Image (cartoon, rainbow, N blue to C red):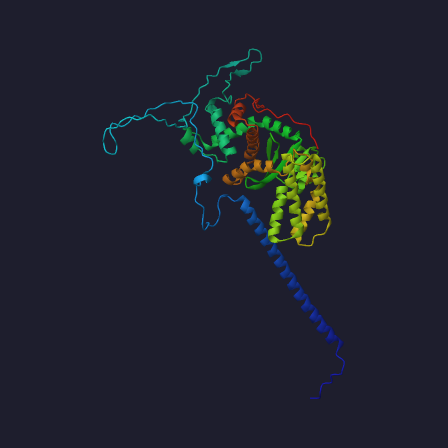
Length: 482
């Protein structure tokens, strides 16, 4: 075989083929690398979501007192001995005694059967629940006919809750219906016959309870409208929302809260249309909220963003990014603003000093937000959020009557969250959701105004036509202020 001449030029087509194969191999490697990168990105996002869900579970767990693992050396339960015992207290004797009973000495000692000599008489008190049994009322209703228009006319007693007769003549009284509403709408207990039967000896069906609750909601409809109008005319409203289920479909339970009134609404979305459904898009007062982006579109309103949410977010970021300067500086400014608010409320800071501090906080935070942050997407998102909410971060330092957090709305949602956990996530029907929002609003408002909820419900149920009971009324709205 003749020796190969290395100096001969290579075939151009062979070179092109080799380069084409090389390019194809590199493109395949690139596609594999891109697919792997996308897989890792999805896995990273999934792990982040799982981490966020686990963190939220700490605040939303079904057993809030569960500690997970047992403490190695737990403290002894109960009061401490000696000077650390604390204030000593006991149950005071009741001011009124309804029944008196004697407990005489036995004829002989129960231990040795010897004679017993009297020494003194001591007193023990019982504050007992009365034995309950239903009161059965029979209303003898007079029925007549008008001599002029020939229409049927019948009488009505103030204790009646309905004019129905015939097959619907046997009904639950207003106290019984009020008890069922309280158990279901305030305390979150499902409809059930056991408690009413065992404790009150009242025989009732589940369907009867449902109809009675719907009737109560129908009677409370004008009151619900009056509460919505009261909130709409209030100078300051705190808003929040949480997930809810209606017939297994995702809905949102919204709440609008003032110091004396609360309105709930179960709506099919979490957007601007739902947020404005009660107060209107042109609401001119002050909105206190958690910073959800839908609230920013209330351009006619002043805003106060919840600082507790921001501080919680800062603490979470510092766990993932220890020593991050931007997050630490934001947290320090927000905490200083809250401390200044407390000092102003205590009277240790003058109005001029508060104004100076307010300007300093805004300036310091403004300088922080002007600098680009290159520490990861979560911190960049925090910076963007603070920029969007900047105008509503320190409103509570301008007006001492404003809250720095949305705690009013958070507290208003707590009973609903308990009901959601106990009742399968929400309501089975749209009608049930409508009754839920009406009755929950009435009960929460009665609690805020220190009214007896049973009296309010009885007044609603015994009204001949749905109306706003004088007992509840509507708080006089104040003119909106900025």
